[in-house]
Length: 363
Image (cartoon, rainbow, N blue to C red):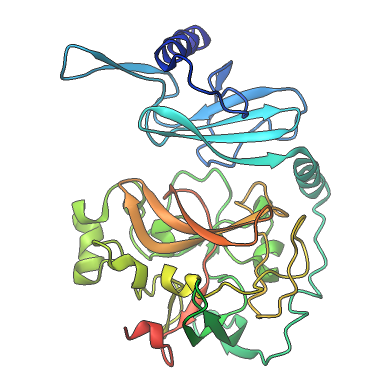
């Protein structure tokens, strides 16, 4: 029945589009099977070769919404729903925006085969060369909350047009703080910081990959803030007050501690924009590995289920919509970083920047 309904809406959409050009990506509105996975990168059929699709969200069936006018507005999905399509070339991930499926990203088949090997054998990559290539000095910071030690450096950043330069101190490793929870967890505890580790293996958290957090968790906000606009909820506003990381246009420069240690804050978009140099590590990247000459040693930490060799996303202290927030995207297919918005309840990494001796934190 779902297939029939989806097909009818697809025919209606194609009729409405007329002669518009089609995308080269696989058609996401095909044989859709229901799935209990809520994370964008989570698909129970990821390791299979046969083509299949799955959709997740509050309502996996398509719907028709009556508009206020005499015309009908066709919607093939509910905003925020996600869908994955397992094709011969890889898995295509889609997200629903404005009632229509939009291609988000693709994981190629080779990477998925590597993931299957990691999950089966718990293979751990060699991390000995993570910091290789940097000729500057690394310092060491010990988090008083758990005694965990992090390398950090005085980063020399330059603006996108190379007209401005600045320096600030930033961790050269992803933050790894909190209690590990298994993937698929549906009940959360606001009294503790909870993290996901890649393929539910704490080795990855403890060996420079760091923890993976939902947006509210990373911002040190109640879990409810992953599903509502911060300014619309008393529990969220009670913490953010006048220092909301998402109010107006100020998020670009927001100094928001989140779950970073005292004296540190989550790296914001302005600081990331100064990170235009050679920030990738020499290791793990399937394509476009860096030399780490600038010392940040960015690794492709994936999303908890896949992408260990292909991408990493770093949360920003910035809400984009009710259930979406911004993150910095660093992909294997391109050298540059750019911001994208994601479901707040997806799991991503964070980097922490020192508050002191940071010109960007004062302007």
